[in-house]
Length: 361
Image (cartoon, rainbow, N blue to C red; front, side):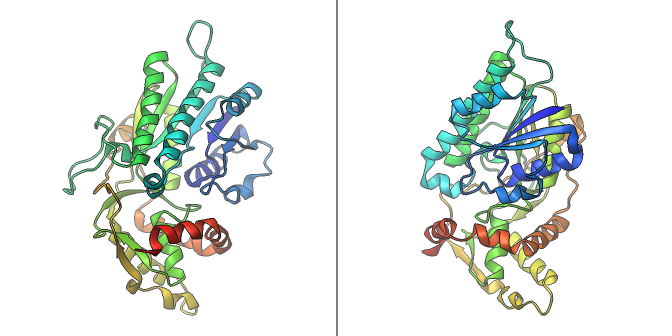
């Protein structure tokens, strides 16, 4: 039985990946989920699989080398899928040192522990071991608003936020280990994910939650910044295919070919809510474009992201399967069916943070 060590598996993308893997492989694999359980980690995301015999949760910080080393010592880890990271750009502007600590130092600890466990006396590595580092398109910087240029694996890095700079640093660490030690790894860079279990600081769940409650919908700047969107299950499938078929030491961009301006997303969420909500649902009266409020633009806000997934399509055969129009309906229905999950997450500390970030704008 192959054993996967998934870091950050209680977060949005990590928990969806774990669900995807159990749907695909069932009892053929074992997953060990390591998560610190910060604001974005939520064990409710995994409640339906927590009693599986082939699933283990360990609460640990990826910067704690003793804790991570112990996991490798006690388990024969075959694959590492490294999601764990501070990932919210606004928070990185407020506390950049936290992002450097977790994203750079944490990745170094994970690499060192995997290297120590997998390396043979002659400097080669045990057969079948692989480390997959999950990263972001934000490391590439910003594209012209021309609809014709794209991020490729060969695009030079040009990060603009503390978040993207810390992710670029972690990417370069993984690349250094591949180049220096021939450490068995891959890097994936993905575009904006959306879908179930996403923390409501992110655009789409924030819009859904606010609209249902008649709260303002904050839109940065002129609302015309462009992002490339991918449904989270499509991303999970891409990660699995890179693990299985990707050539060692290579980077693969996983993008959705779904470019949308932020204001388009706002309008589409509102229109879809009105389409899905029953006529008798009292929340319908809250859903209005009058809620849109343009707020001061984010510092260093990149104008456009767009990934070209040509390499992963040609070399591995992966393509996004979910059209945005279908994915956004699936996503909104999920949030409507999981109101308790959303309520639990949007109370307390998160509410205080939200008011700090958006309340005075």
